[in-house]
Each structure stands twice: as C-alpha cells, then as structure tokens.
Image (spheres, one colour):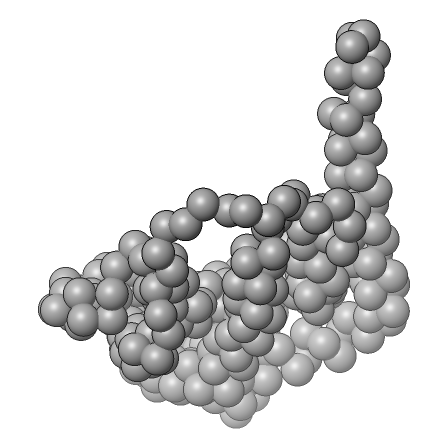
Length: 253
C-alpha cells in the first residue's frame, strides 16, 4: 500500500471533522444573527432577578465606555451557543458514531439527550430559584449608606458562572447511572460512600460558584439530591459485564 493510500483515511477524517466544525459554527452564527436585534431585550430579561431587588431610584450602570454594546453582544453570543448545544452535540455524535459498536450507540445516544435536558434544567433552576434568593439576600444586607448599583458587565460575568456551574452540576444523575451501567461501581457501593459524596458536593460548590455560602449551598444541596436520584435509577439498571465485541463498527449513521 502506498503512502498516499495510507494517508487517505486520515485526510478523510480531517475533512469530515472540518465539515462538522463549520456546520456547528454556522448554526451558532445563524442563531446569533437572529437574536442580535433583541440583544438589549435579552439582557433586560436576564437582569430582571437583580433589578427587582434594587432600591427605588437605583439602576444598573455601565462603568466602561463600550459596555452598553459589548455586554449584550457577549450575552447574545453565549446564549446562541447554549441554544445550539443540541445541534453541536449532534455534530459530535455524527462524527464519532461510525466508529462505535451497536451497543455503544444504544448507550451513548440516550445519555446525550439526557445530558442536554439536564443542562437546560440546571440553567432554569439557577434563573428561577437561585438568582432571586441570592440577589434578594445580597441587596438587603449591605450598609445603609451604600447604594446598590451593579455594573452590567460584572453582573453578566457573575450569572454566566452560575449558569455554567448549575448546568454542569445537573449532569450528576447521568454520570452516576453511566458509572453503574459500565460496571465501574454499583448503586450499593455509591450509597455506602454517601458521607464522602456530601462533602465532595460542598467542595464542588465552593470551586464552581462565587465565594459566598449561599450560592455554594444552593449548588451543593441540589447536586447531592441529584446524586441520590442517580442512585435510585441506577438500582433499576444492570451493569454491563466486560464482553468481547463481535459486531463491527458501522460505517454510516
């Protein structure tokens, strides 16, 4: 076999990867173009959990010259990526699926769908439950002679960290079930390690959230509860014993 023939599969994979990446970028771009005209309205919606607790006569402020434009722009771009997550994961799935065995496909696809739904659920939990609690607390405990007037860019950075933290944290049931299905552990073994898991949840909350007890606890407690959900459903699944694969990877979707 010539060197050109040996390199051909690699080149084909690289071309396929480039095609998938371009499709993913185009999807984000199309969504962004559709949302950009509503950038200010989107920021108004996202900032509502804080604005409702601002003292009368107080508003959010922009401390940098370009912030009134760049902050809604950045929010819209990030939102476009979040909205495109199902399509982005599909492109990743379409790229790796031809090299997977049938039993791997049956396992991976439901996990991908569950991961997307749980990620969105984590973001919704942060917006509708966590934000009102922490902003209500923060705006009520400050000194009387200090007026709360939050910078719009600082607020965006703060809530994006929380969105990402809660979105990732809500993947715990998928990770737990996946560990049980693959035979890496069992539901009983995980239940026996519950005290360590609880401590780990609070450590994760400390690392992924801003340095305040409220947001750390609001992340740690749901992660613990989701871990318990993962154990519950893990008891209904059977771990896969290591077996030799007799089916060949498929060449097409």
